[in-house]
Length: 249
Ligand SMILES: NC(=O)c1ccc[n+]([C@@H]2O[C@H](COP(=O)([O-])OP(=O)(O)OC[C@H]3O[C@@H](n4cnc5c(N)ncnc54)[C@H](OP(=O)(O)O)[C@@H]3O)[C@@H](O)[C@H]2O)c1
Image (tube, rainbow, N blue to C red; front, side, top):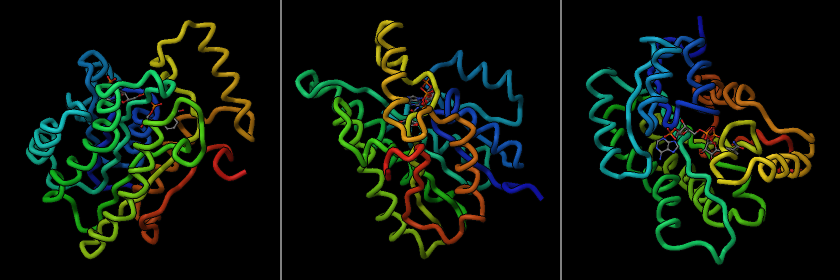
């Protein structure tokens, strides 16, 4: 039997990077999958690549009204929800002096407030052994310059994994956090750097990692499969770091 057979899974931000690879691995393990994203072309590309096995939904993780709409839309197509992988994230990094209230709110809304209200909106359809996986970052554990608001939002998610596990455990629902270290995706391109600067940053980041390389999306996706499946049934309120050693060495 496949590891996610008969499970219904939602992945936010599932049109690229870690979320997209996780959608592919969930499908291979027998799950029915829905993914969200903001860009219609990317959603269409996922439909074309993965076919009707995947439901694509346009939804902005940072828009609170969208969270209720997403829950309603899912409840029309899925009988229940066994896995929620809150993966969409705003990775904006900048020096302290460059932040303004709008940028701050956008990062916190996308990474912390939206996820909180999404979980609240999904409560009625969560199955009694549901696994909620929050995507953190090793940045919440280290003092990386320019990561202040981003890292604080991810630290908030570590706390949410614990408190919501405490609150939902009597329903059999587990909330855990999967924290990547530097991983090869297009996320760095969103920093708005010139190509040369971006490549230099990539090299700098690799050197920060004890394993001297960036992780791959498949390494993260395999960890997500474990956390989504019943194999992780004794894991509650915990953090799994898949980070090449950045957070511990
Ligand atoms: N890559 C890394 O090195 C790294 C390290 C630590 C943690 N992480 C975390 O891992 C997660 C995924 O990162 P990634 O590197 O895979 O990113 P990515 O390659 O840039 O992909 C991000 C995905 O999320 C979607 N997305 C972004 N903002 C969204 C929003 N507001 N609402 C809905 N969808 C949204 C994107 O689609 P649209 O833009 O079309 O909406 C895309 O599908 C993030 O939470 C990030 O913080 C990544």
